[in-house]
Image (tube, rainbow, N blue to C red; front, side):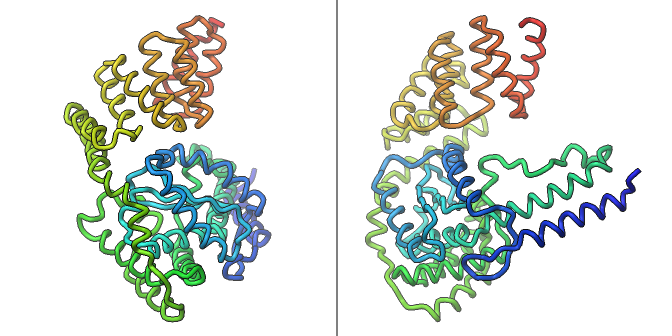
Length: 427
């Protein structure tokens, strides 16, 4: 019988061997760092996860396509002077009110409209994008994933001897990363490294490096007191501190002064500023709905629709609120308008399909639910497709979709398991 000490030794030996075999050169600093992910895997992972993460976080901002072009131009300008200019960099603006930005392996970068509205000039935008470019160029995400993989593998060895403990259900033979889980939370060293080299990229591209100082000062101010509300996601992944402000000031002293391009930036975000009240009403409607104040939420979102009738999210929320009231016919109409205004988001097809199912229009429900799966695999789509097929008497297809939904876990997984049990023996 293998003793616990032997098991612990085996786990430690595995981790040590992995660390020794996984040492690579950081492409930005030239220093040794740990990574089990090859550059080819990095590119593949980023390419695969980029559309998934976008779908999970509101999809691309579509009201003003010129803003997407503008952000991409600034990003590509910085990418060209980075330490890995050969990466297939992409930059998108997401239709999300949360002030945040993130980078996936391989140079796949996103910034939310909620952060753009807080910035003052192009130099500050360059500070955000330059920082994220360093995360990609320095392979910070790959390093974070590798550390998790080693920890998971080491724990898997330990789990063989402790499966009767509380740890047994938590151990896996690798990481169970979902789409958004690939957006790493970086350590202090990675953040300081991204600040320093991001400023170098800014200067090389002709931007005022003091934009990074102003950006960090702004984040420190926002993190204090009531102003931090709604900024948790940004501060969790990019924690601000006065020490980062001080470090950025020191870095700026050795860099040439550059442009801020404030007028160009203000022109680029003009539509966002015009729509600020509409998005505030939308966000307030979401908050009211979370408190089950559905009448107030409906009034607020309809006000937002009048302020910006092109925004699909406003109509999707109206559909949610009407569906909550079991007004499925009106909800279907609202979802239909959301689909027409933005057909590239999975949730619009999913919700219209669910409304069609409630109205017993199973042909339309099957079409829309299946369409949603083209954009994003969800347990909800599979569960409701299972219901549609079951209602139509196609128990075999229903069973397959329930099986897939059950793997999603959570409430929808539990419901799927119940339907599987009900159908077992009837196929």
